[in-house]
Length: 329
Image (cartoon, rainbow, N blue to C red):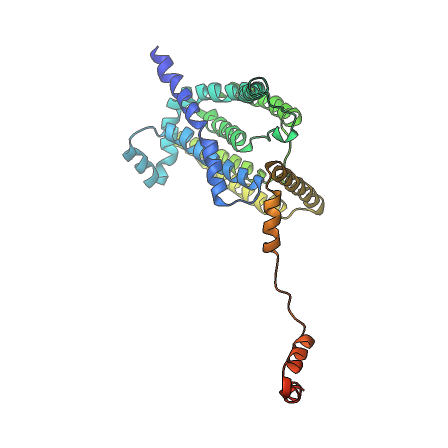
């Protein structure tokens, strides 16, 4: 019972807590003023990723007093040794977290319990027709991408000191490939085209995980007094950062400057989104109000021509018309 409470229950409580994080981050991204759906989901994805990595990995590894965590931040040179000492004690928690959050999330994604229950209630209890294709949801990038990247971070960092986690992660990624491929092709629909905006997020997170794993390896070799191995890890970190800089200069402009073909696809998806918004306005009965607002929103005074102004000056003088005409000339 003690092992069940101390090993399995904390990961379950953490998993339940994290269900409220993506909607909250999406709300924050909406308040920021992003003008596109892909921009809101990208912003929410980054926020959820940072929040998840800090709270799942670093907080659990540094699960000590606040003073100890402040000392960890104030002494950067001791970071590899602290991570190398504390990470093996959290290996059991990370394995149970992969089981509870990883495998369970894949099963929930495949079964779709909440959407299925909602559709059944709408169809058989409230007697509503569900033939509208607009009701089909899109893929939740802001919830699934941070989870996959977190498991990649756990695989990189725990492979040195706790390699038992690798079989569980291998099963997760194999099942995840099959399930996510099926969901994207047969379940979710594409409302917009982001142009691969999440690729830099995935790349940066992977490089960060790799560098963190190398820093932990440096701390492990330092604890074991292996100077040769520690000296070989330092160039590896430098080469990884140089590779990241090369990829940033070589591939990042591609995701900022779209080609003509991708730009035309983005225009098509955006026009489809505008058509969808017009249909929603028609169904809600707001079109008449919008038409009334358009009449006053785009009405501007028509400027008079210079010849008309001169004619007004000439003709408006009465008895002094000759003087006005002379002054105009």
